[in-house]
Structure formats: structure tokens, C-alpha cells
Image 1 (spheres, rainbow, N blue to C red):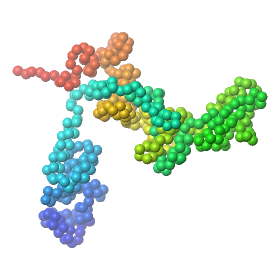
Image 2: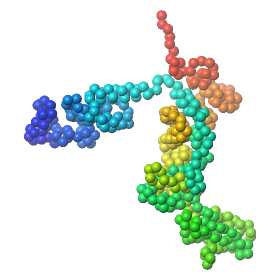
Image 3: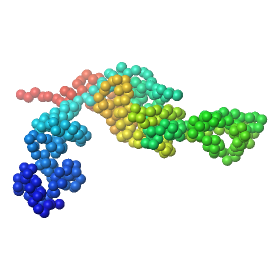
Length: 448
């Protein structure tokens, strides 16, 4: 690693490093090692403190110039969260040549001060602030739905009804939908995207043609529509195969005119009618629960699938060719929790609420939404904000009674001899004393 001659030491002396330190550096490190970035030094398994010292030496101010090492070192020492550090480093390095050491320090100090100002004050009533911040804009939200234009429009609930769906943690949505993104080769060609859509959309035999029963021959006839077969990427052989799956006794004859004759030896009209309904409702292709799939071109240029109905688990299990499951989304929070876990459900709550508010042109700080999402998911399952969820599980009797079903809550509490500690906001407001937050969080005693 060290150089055998004094050429390396001479290079350090020319850079302004005294002779003794230059000789020591020459023994320990090569010139190339000292010319790389902080991250590259760490990749070489050099100790962090040593790497910082090297960067600091490389960042010696020559005529006021700010080196990359100065940015790395000063930002790393700022005490900011890692994501803010990364963003700050990128922006500072982009304008590094225009900075001086004083300006660099001033910028970092201002960012740190802004970060400290953005922190919530100790003992702040964050729940009340979050409720106000969402409740006030919520009064301006419209009661409407949004639809995607196209053949057979897809309607999506937005506005206040959507917010209510989210905070109520409803498992059955009024308009469940998925946004399915495709892999590269399928996302760039519309015909490939439509083929994937046909593989996902549920297709029954009744969707492919006419079905009728004949009392004379006690048979069921299926007249397939060639245009529908082509549109849904289904062949006659696929239909015949699905019909034969219904029963081993099923006899299917393909007639000269293209019709299919189905016979199982039915003796009564009731059996024949039942057979007709069974054949009509036989799934040929697709995922049960996804009634319609619409192909649209996104602003990025790729084709995206939008569905009526949401079946995230079945979509994952079927592994449809061309689907990029890692970028597929659903508006059903309960499905996300079941398939991807509670953290994904929490992120979905934040994302869905922010999207709904932004669509209405309402600006709400994401941290209020995050607080609500945390409260709904902190026990490992998604709970509603209501008497069957968070509000109904509060320890305070008065708080539960103030929310809903007042008499029932007070009666149950009296029967079980419950005690209210008066620690929350609601119960203290009810009894007329200061809440134990903000200025009410401390008690001041005047001394002599």
C-alpha cells in the first residue's frame, strides 16, 4: 500500500502538508487512496474516523475553494437525519464551486435551524392539531366520484366518501380498483398490454356468445361469437376444455355451423335449466372479482391497466405473465394488509389520504396524515377510528361516552365499577379543568 520512494511524500508536501505528516501518510496510504471520495474510502474498509481525517486534509481550503470533502464532513457532523443529509449533500455539491467556507457553514446552520423549528413542541396536543388540520379542509370536500374516460368508464370514489372509507377501515369498498403496471416489453406495446388485460379480466362463457337450452333434445347449445373470442384472446378449444371440466359425463359436440352441443343425460326441465346456468357461469379466463380492465397510456409513455374490482392476493398467486407486481397498487387497505403486511398498509393509508386531499386542491401537512395512519396501525392490524376501533378502546369512560352511544358506555362503566383517571383531552374538557398537555402539562408552585 505504501510507496517505496519519496515521490508520494513530495506530492503531499507540495499540497501544503508538513514533511513529517507527509512521510507518515506515504507509509500508510497510496496517493490514489487519498484521492477518492468518503464513500469509496469506507468501501476500502478504512476506519470511519481515519477516512474523515483524510477527507478533511484533502479539503484544505486553497484560496477559499470548497472541496467535496468539506461538504461530506460538515454535513455528516450536522446531526440531521440521514435522508436530509443525502439530499443536502447532493444540492451542495451541485453548487460547490460557487461556495466559500463561510457560506457552506451558514447554509448548513440554516438547514439545521429549520429542521429544529419544524419539530413539534414538547407536550403539544398533536392529536387535536391533526384532527383540526384534516377536519377543517374536510368540510370543503365534495361528495363525488371520478371516472376514467374510455370504453366502459371506471368510476372511483373520491372526496369525503373516500376519506370516510379509509378512516373506517372498510373491507368492502364502494369502488375497489387496482392500478397494474407492466414489465418493460408489455408496457411499451398496446397489443401486449391488452393481452395481459384479457388474462386478468374475468371472462365467462356467457360473455363469449349465446347460450340456450333445447327441450326437444334435452341439450344445451352454445353459439360463440368470433369477434368476442378474438377480443378476449380466447379460442374455441379453451371454451370446450372449460365445459368438459364441469363434469366427466359432459359430452360436447362441435357442429358444422360452429355451435357447441352439450349433453349430460338430463331427464327433467329443472336439471336442464341448472345445466344451462352452470355452463353460462363457467369461468374461461381471468381472475374472479375483476369485472373490467381498462388499458390507458400514462404520461410517462407506458401502458397501465386500471381494474374494476380488486383481488391483489389472487393476482399475486396466479403470477400473470407481464405483470410487474412490485409496482401494482390497490385502493383496498385491508387487502394490502393481508398480502403485504401492516407497514405497507400504513403507507397506503398515508398515500391514499394525501392523494384524495390533493385531488381536491387541499394542502394538508403529511405529518398529520402519518399520525392518523400510525394510530390506526400501531397494534399490528388496521383499526378504524370509531367506536369499534380506536375511540371505542380508550381507557377513559367519559371519552368513550362523549364519542357515541353515551348511555350504553356510562351504564357499562357503572356496572363494572370503572374509574376515569382524567388523563386525556376530552374528559378534562367535560369536567372543566385544564388538559394535561401544553401549558397544562406542568404545575408551577410559587416559592417564598
